[in-house]
Length: 287
View 1 (cartoon, helix red, strand yellow):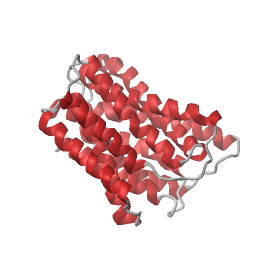
View 2 (view 1 turned 90 degrees about the vertical axis):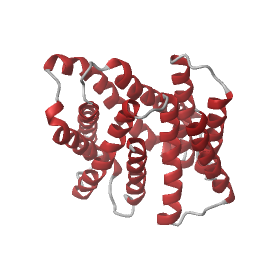
View 3 (view 1 turned 60 degrees about the vertical axis):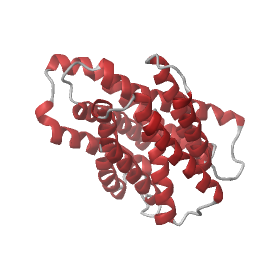
View 4 (view 1 turned 135 degrees about the horizontal axis):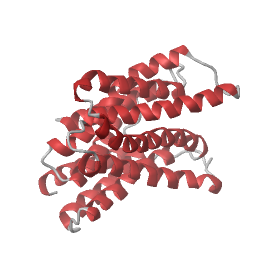
């Protein structure tokens, strides 16, 4: 149930991001506000589980690492969407699932077999077909580094969330508190970035955008907290959880795109969704 709710929360984030332009919301300011709201959610819900100072000091560097990845990957995604196109950027981020799953398999000394290779290949092809769309050729070789950083950075974030939960955090360090600290670190760095841009005169404060961020922060918090919690509560292998989470978001996002935003349900997307569903079923049945 935790993993399903995490996927549902991530899909709601997709809906909000798609709605921001129509609501005239500045995404950067909304995201910064969302990090502080996500932090507040975690502290409000799990304040009784805040660890002792010694454990808090041990866990803080990992929360800082997550915060750096949260905000830097978001800013880079925005830049890459402008330089390389939304579709190409989306594919680069989603394809990182393959790298993170393979690395988790290797780190845990799980032998590669047809039971984990087949669903992974089906998921990769399915995600690509769902995500890919023709767009103007606004991509230049000078901007390809962004796609590489997003690919490896997104896989790195998946691994950091996995390792902090399974190996790095002290015993008794609550998942909800750790997620909140990660968002706090991202919020502080994002606010610093905004202040610099504001001093340079490149952005102006927009109240509507910060209100949008308040709405965004709640599902964002639970998308991360429930994903981290899934590693402890679900009777599944870590590589299965990573695959199910990423493919599940792609499926939900595609369905929401068709139903809410009237996107075209092409043959390509249909085949992609079928492959994604097959990967989910195969992973659960044989993974």
